[in-house]
Length: 199
Image 1 (tube, rainbow, N blue to C red):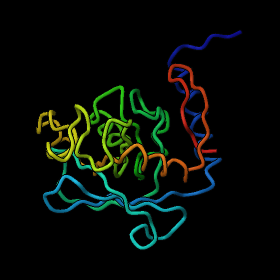
Image 2 (image 1 turned 135 degrees about the vertical axis):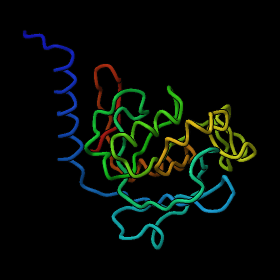
Image 3 (image 1 turned 120 degrees about the vertical axis):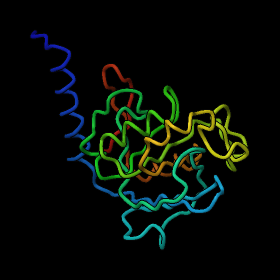
Image 4 (image 1 turned 30 degrees about the vertical axis):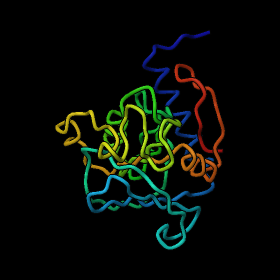
């Protein structure tokens, strides 16, 4: 058996994931990330194969970054980042580019996840909580919630000045609803474990 260098293995793996993500995606889940005003509590709208989430989508609460942008409006297809938690170099940057990236909370700081998908060309980041936040975001563990002015409140404001795309955090429950619309399946990826990708 031929053993490939690690860089070749990574490239082949990324190409394989890209084929899975582009060739088998049959449905589109579209979302709008929108924020205005001073409240850290904002809203996300999403729908399945609809022309306008604002008119036809579900409207769910979301938490803004404490030091992130104060006003934004971005609409696009949701693409699940791989790895799903953004803890390593993205295996599907071409699919994320031009879309809103979905990322799971955990493993690395939230700002690192946002910066990774921003570097890949995403127009927004939709972060899914891991169960630490209450549904109203009044309690959100160490990441901070409404009382702290938003998530990642302990981060340095300067670090968030590098973030140029919208970023909102939804509850685990609402994140699961989004994922259910996306028709995902679990595959094992060496070095990353089980990851959710489109059917």
